[in-house]
Length: 154
Image 1: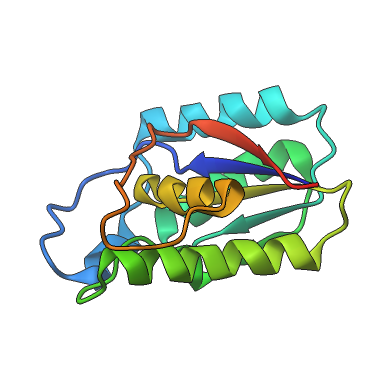
Image 2: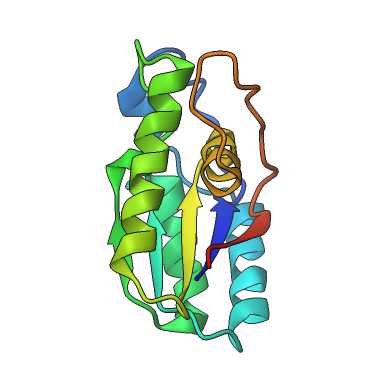
């Protein structure tokens, strides 16, 4: 199985503060829309089985734009949302890794799945695919906008 982790395209900033409701509503900038279009065009020759995305607007919108070229089913999974208020690092990693594990076990070994989520969640993908236990002292990585990273599971 191949999972393509992807940070959402460039988003508009709401000055979100600590209100998670505002985080969910941030949409893409015009540059972000163009980024997603270009990546969709680049991926159109790939056989993509599904796109799994966080329900945050910026992630869903990135998925929808990319999918104009792919025509794959889009599945939303809130476990791919970014850090939630009161959640520690270990809890974030565990939640993300549970979503990844379900993806791995829900599709076939020769499938390619795109996962669109927030940049901080790349840490969970690294932990999952390299067998690193979730913990509060695991360094958090950050991915750049619309940066596809390919992970494989045999």
